Amino acid sequence: MEKIHIYHTNDVHSHLESWPRTRSYLQERRAFHEQHDEACFVLDIGDFIDRSNIFTEATLGKSSVTLLNEAKYDAVTIGNNEGITLAKEALNQLYDQADFDIIVNNLKESNGEMPAWAQPYHVYTLASGVKLAVVAATAPFPDYYNNLGWRIDDPFTCLHESIAEARKKADIIVCMSHLGLTADERLAEQEGDVTLIFGSHTHHVLEQGKYINQSLLTGGGKYGRYIGHSIIHFDDGVQHVETELIETASLPPERGEHREVAAQQRYGEELLDVEVFETTRFYNKEWYHYSKLSHFFAEALLDFSDADCAFFNAGIFLTDMNKGAVTALDIHRMLPHPINACVVELTEAQLREMLAIIDDAHDWPRRELRGLGFRGNVVGKMLTYHITQKDGNLVVDGKPLVPGDTVKVVTLDMFTFGWFFPELKVLPKTYLLPQFLRDILTIYGYKYFA
Image (cartoon, rainbow, N blue to C red; front, side):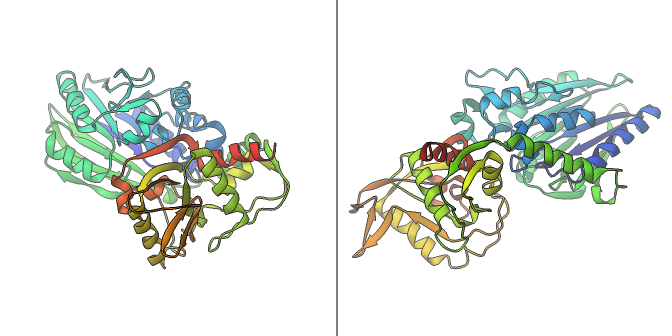
C-alpha cells in the first residue's frame, strides 16, 4: 500500500503574516514523511503573489520565489496575479531562480509554443516506482493575456490533452486548477482519470473536500489561512483519497516571525523609496467628494488613454499626495490596487444609461468592497470628468452629444467585470496594459512637474 501525502497552498495573495509558521510546518512534515518512507509533495495553486504587497511589488514577485524555495515546494501553477499583473518580460523572469516545477498547460507564446519556464504536465516517479502526474491550467483572461503578448487557450481542451498524455505514463493523475470551483466541478464531470483537483481562484473553502464522480475537489480559501493536506492511498489503483485543511492560526508561532514579516516590509520600502517627481502643492483625497487628488488623477488618466471622458470611484485613493518629493513608495501606498485602466466606446444612449446607474446607486459610496483588484476600504463617490449635462443634453469634453454619437470613455477595469455595469462586461474594450493606476499617475506626474 502506497501512501502519498500532498500539501498545498492557494491564493496567498502575498499575505505573509503566517508564512513563517507555514514554511516551518511544511518543512517539518516533509522531514517526517521522509523518515517514514512516505511520499510527500508540496504544491501552490496560484496567486501566491499580489502586487498590493510592498515586498512583492518591490521585487516584481521574485521575493515570493525565494520563499517558495525555502519551503521546498515541488511544483506551482500560475494564477491571474502572476499571469496578468506582470508585464511579459517580468513574468518570463519571475521563475529564473525557482527550485520547483512550474506547470500550466493553457498559457502559450503567441506562436503557440510553451513558455521556456513552464511545462504542460509533469510525471513524478516515487521510490516505489508508482508514477504521479500533475497537470495544471489557469483562468483564461484573453483580453489581458493577448494584450500582454501571450496566448491563453481553453483550459478544458488543454487539460483533456494533458490528461490523455499523462494517462499513458502515470498511475495517478492530479490537477492544479486555478479555474474556480464551478470549473473544477465541470472538469470532474468531464474527465474520468483525475483523482484530486486542487482548487483555487474563487477562494472557496472545502474542509473535507467534495466528491464529484471519482474526483475529490479541494479548496483552501485565501490569504494563507489554510494549508491543504491530501492523502492518496494507492495499491494497484487508488483505494481511498482524503483531504483536510490545517488552519495556520492554530500552528505554533515561529520565533521571530513578526520580525521577519517586518523585515520584509522594510526591505520593500527601501527599494521603493525612490523619488519619481516633486509636487508644488498638497493634493488632498476625499472618499465622498471630488478632490484635488481626483482632479489630478483624472487628467493623468485622460492624458494616458487619449479618451474623451472618464469615470472612476473616489475610494481608490488611500492617502493624500503631499507637497514636495513623491516616491514610488508614496504612490504605492496611495494606489496599491492591481488595477488597470480600460477604454470602452459608448454611444450617447449607453453613456446616458451608465450615468443613470451612477445616479441611482445611492448605497455605492459607503459600500465595502473586497476583490476585483480593489485593495481599499469603500467604493466612495463615483466621479465623472469631462461629462456634463446641459438642458437635458450630454456634453462630453465640451461637445454636445446627439443620439448616435459615440465617445471613448476611460475607466477602471474592475467596472468592466459585470458587477457594477453589466453592459460594460459585454462591450468591446481595450485594457491599457501593463501599467497599473499608480504607474499612470507616476508617468503623468513626472511629465507635469518636469
